[in-house]
Length: 473
Image 1 (cartoon, rainbow, N blue to C red):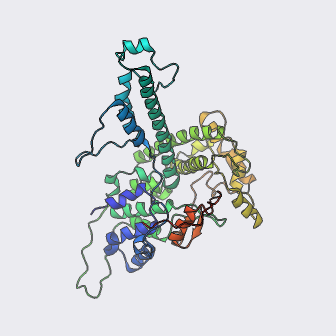
Image 2 (tube, rainbow, N blue to C red):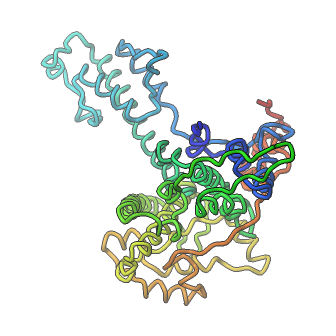
Image 3 (cartoon, helix red, strand yellow):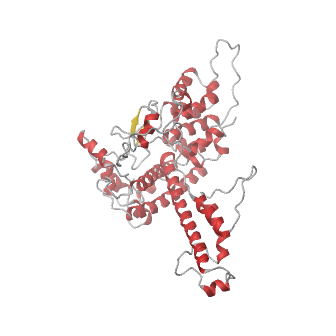
């Protein structure tokens, strides 16, 4: 059974309806009529079955781009031939920082340059040094030009590294380590793969512009697939009238809890993992917390956020902060879950870094206040505790009793609010994925595309020209 198309969606942002469409032919003969109806209800909204047969929403997370242009120019100036693509070996991808680094290591020695040394005053070779390096036939002007293109190429590589890091944080903030599951692990069990793919798509849903709360990922379809993973062998399909006998049962399989734990590390899942795998996940989440703490510290220092309200203002880099904050909270939740699974929750008595609040749009906050709401009490807890990067570096103490006291002062239950223990959740009904334009739900995907093209709901000045409809396809 080929699960590769399903596996490839783990690194994308496909709609849950489209994942359900992929699952139907794989699971149709192994579901009861009621289960099949539940999955079919979700698949009914897929792009393939829609009137427009397309969606205005991007089906992938933004990937770092732009390296090939600089790489081709550098190769042209150095008269260096790049590897040609073939059916057996595709050409190098210079949007990959590793490929750019390899090109830099090939070109830099030709002008006596050391990669990473890019100061125009200190690192360029003077005439005697160029002569000693065998570059006497190279004019100063051409040498400077080659030095400059390598400098720009290294700067581009650094920007790609940063963009790749932020994309990784965005993936983690949505679905944990789902994108890091190997295909061998993913394809080991059908229902495990089905749950991981569908639940990942549910986790990847975009935030809506609302004060009613965001959609929860664990819906009726997720619950159906998870119960099959938990209960083991699926039941024999109900006989249809034109069948003379039931089809043979598929061979018994073992649920792949290791793969499921990458995207759904709930206590029930972690309890089924051996101690070695629990420890491995704990180490990975701990390492990520340390990486995120340093990134958050740098981002905080480069901005002037209002800690008491976390309402965004002009000049704030809210995109970078919110992606990192989402990744921190996801990593922290999973880290806490693993501490409890390993019986190591005593660690929180001494080291208990808090959550990180995202920046909120001022209009959403005003909407809350105008409807009788108030500022999120979690923000009050965040403002009362030391910064998480100070806690992990040892510069400040943040213990379990301190967090519990801050929660009670803000009117939150420390046990159920996610600050000190795994957060419980229930099953929500399946809800079709809305077409969104800057968080605002639009009925028609084509209209959504038109509105986005014309900056509607973006907060930016509208173009002077009338609305222009983009081409379909």
